[in-house]
Figure (tube, rainbow, N blue to C red):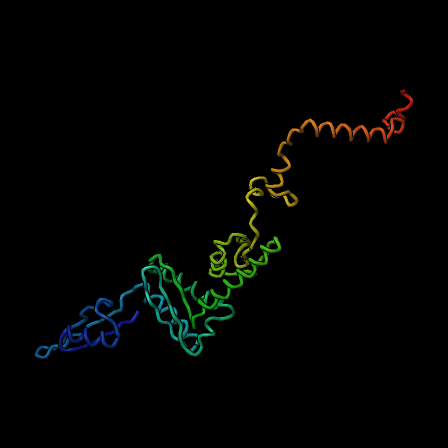
Length: 264
């Protein structure tokens, strides 16, 4: 935390000089009078210390890491009701993003541990640089819809490469309302991945997975009772059976016991 001692003719003057030097407001610091000297012309020494908050913890931690890494970059922290938002700017921002944001995710994870340990605000922490998060979201959303179209067309599930929780949430969110596919996460960290599978029809979900099963309409047609025959249809059916019998002949009919003609 930033702390400074200022000596001035009065407490108010020393406090004002300290706030100007720290670039902070009075509600962001703790101030105390350290000592008072002089008999005729008194001098007041005031120690001004920046208050410990989640935002200051994040700011000091991230900028401390950046300084030790000797990277030309700076972190700007903005605290909102739902989360701490950190924006990285500078010539070497790409080095803090890393391959597919792996360095950025690691920095975000470590910063969140520090914040929750020292100041449990139960807030999220989002670190971004060069608008990487938004660009990555657009790329993954486009990829998810492309694979979903392929899965719906082929009726075969596809597995994506391992992703971090942030990227998996993008895939799930992009296909949440899709009518033809569903998404599920499988595996263990850090190799957890998303599987995009085709949705089963309602009749398959009720009766089980029947790949060669007929559709519900065909099953209704097959189970539908036949209509009763009219007298003319019945007579025509009997004539057809009679002609077939005469054509085949009794002597040509076989049974399991042999030729039928020996019984006549």
